[in-house]
Amino acid sequence: MQLNLIKDGYDHLTLEEVLAEAAYLNKRSLMATAQLNKIEQAITEIKQVLRASNKSGYIVRPARLSDIDSLESMVAYWAQQGENLPRSRADLIRNILSFAVCVKENVVAGCACLYVYDSGLAEIRSLGVSPQIQRQGQGRALVEFLLDKAHKMEIKKVFVLTRSPIFFEHVGFEKTTIQALPEKILKDCDNCRKKDRCDEVAYEYNFNY
Ligand SMILES: CC(C)(COP(=O)(O)OP(=O)(O)OC[C@H]1O[C@@H](n2cnc3c(N)ncnc32)[C@H](O)[C@@H]1OP(=O)(O)O)[C@@H](O)C(=O)NCCC(=O)NCCS
Image (cartoon, rainbow, N blue to C red; front, top):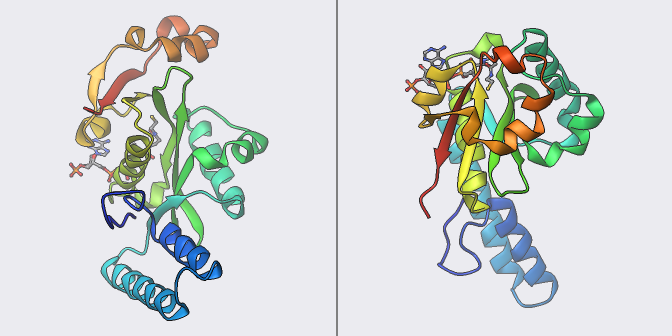
């Protein structure tokens, strides 16, 4: 969720960041408490409008450590189905900042993470949505959340290796080849037991900066 305020350092602040900045200015006596209260009230009203508009009750947001139990279950479920790589709890905790989750009443019903390579490209990994809510737009919401995050970081290309090509075509990715993604080959493919019979297809999303 972004608010475009004015075209300067306040551009692209999240609601939480707006509130934190206002509280900081108020604490330093640079903003009157009445103005801080107005901002808090406006944010409360914005959230009420969002809640009333969101009929499904699912939202996508950055993962937190309190999500870890249900995040771990979701990742383990799709790993058991052979759709994603398994990840240990310790790995999930270390990489919590890279994860987005789709939640309802604080239970994770979907997840995905954005892994940034040292070349500056990024990969969508560990994407999975609960079997109970498939085809209801939450996979798209997770991918769009991570694309927005990548865009803010000025990442030029996001790629994915998948057995769900149609989904990625629907969310705006274009087909590429694994050979065009040397980061992936070096990181995972060289050590993969399916190296010579890979059944995944490479897709990429390019930002035009
Ligand atoms: C792939 C996955 C994340 C998609 O999530 P989802 O919530 O079911 O997908 P969405 O409802 O957001 O679908 C977005 C679009 O893709 C389309 N789509 C999704 N899955 C599709 C499928 N299997 N076949 C055809 N179209 C599909 C939807 O119709 C929708 O189209 P539209 O928005 O243009 O009308 C989900 O199926 C999943 O968890 N799969 C198992 C794990 C997995 O394969 N992860 C990917 C590893 S890279």
